[in-house]
Length: 622
Image 1 (cartoon, helix red, strand yellow):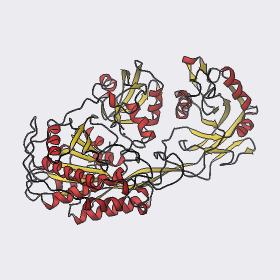
Image 2 (cartoon, helix red, strand yellow; image 1 turned 60 degrees about the horizontal axis):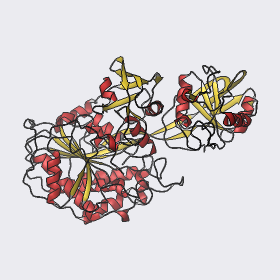
Image 3 (cartoon, one colour; image 1 turned 135 degrees about the vertical axis):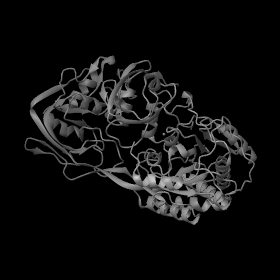
Image 4 (cartoon, helix red, strand yellow; image 1 turned 90 degrees about the vertical axis):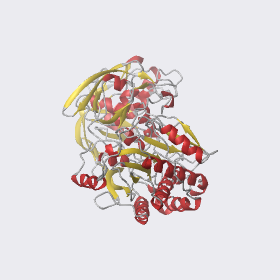
């Protein structure tokens, strides 16, 4: 399940929800595959209620689910990170199981659907920083930051203190300096970070300390580059992927900053920290030349899918059952281990457990397809931990027409069943679905805990925002989440087998009932918001990924400021409150600077048009 630090921040910014504890044209080849799947007549008109068919239930045993977990969560698979060899081994294993179950391929005769994702940032050898004849050393004197833009630039220097504009605190480092065409030098953090008297809230950082926010405002002010002064430089090796900030950005030591500017910058910092007055100064004759050689590494990952076509099926409709199989690899920014040490994160519960349940539900249904009227597509997604990228790619390039998908059942972290109770999101996304889930659960002596709306940080979100009802099964958060301790011995295999059996029951019901589940747009409860107490809410639902032309929206939350303003799914946010938006991080930073009740102008690209809307931000529930 994707609820890392960055994801939580982005979900909070957009007003999305998590369980309490985140378009491209369809190519002809996919249209051909869709035609081969949808060949029969559509089923009956949807009704307003669902009934549970009388049906035999088959139980999945712990002995069947355990081997899948032990293989997928073994050290040999290196935590199934997007950049590891282990992710390929996991894909090969899943493909073998799909073939053994004789599930049909749906991607041009293949069980695999490839897509690219960014897996890391590397610094190339061409990076340089020069002042006149003085050339500084990369890795010793300066380092391009991972979110830096790539390229060459030059310009006169300007010292802008901490690079902060805070008019509400009567503090503005840019008041006496025109940033346009200059290379800005400023300190990381904010004034008076160790002072109880600081107007910036003393020892607790405020939003003004955000480096990405500073870079965004420097970029919008017309700066050519930014140089951030830090006591310690980051490592110059490979780092986790970060979105391009759109501005060449270097980190330098205070000693190098002093050489660049020609005065005692540490003394200037002390002065600002003492009286909280800016000390900005622009230079005409100190011109630097910069090159940032930042290389974003992209690799192919694979979604895998297999189609069960029941012998007597009379419908061209499809039930999708899915889980993600990727995890964190050796840790990285989303790890909650508390240290930077590279250590295998096996992800036994997150989400080898979900994969095992899907595969064994598929085995159960393939062994006895009696009474199934709809086809069933079992999908194992990659790229979930990178921001739901695999499921988003699948939905954008679906081998099945989206209007033919009657339901998406998603399993993510289902290996810790406690007191025979599990969580479920999306039960209100189809009329009557809650009743179906309650009855099926009661037959097995399980108790569903409903709640959380239908939008959350897992793969069902990509389907729900395109009008497909969803059911997201989850057995709860625990102390092993996103830590190396999420290992095979922590899984409750009997409980996991119960979840796999329930998944088979639910899928059988959906594939055999006469009625088609009717999609309902769910009112998302603000009280379950990711980022409680996190300032204002806008309520748009983003497509995660490495877009650089704005924030692509898959939908908006019902009743949210975004919907009230007229923003809708498919729009691309390009400006917000007067600032250019190139990616999700830009949007997060701008939204963080606002307050509930503020009115903002939002510019979106809709097709060939650019439209502007006024929105009044709402308060996020504490």
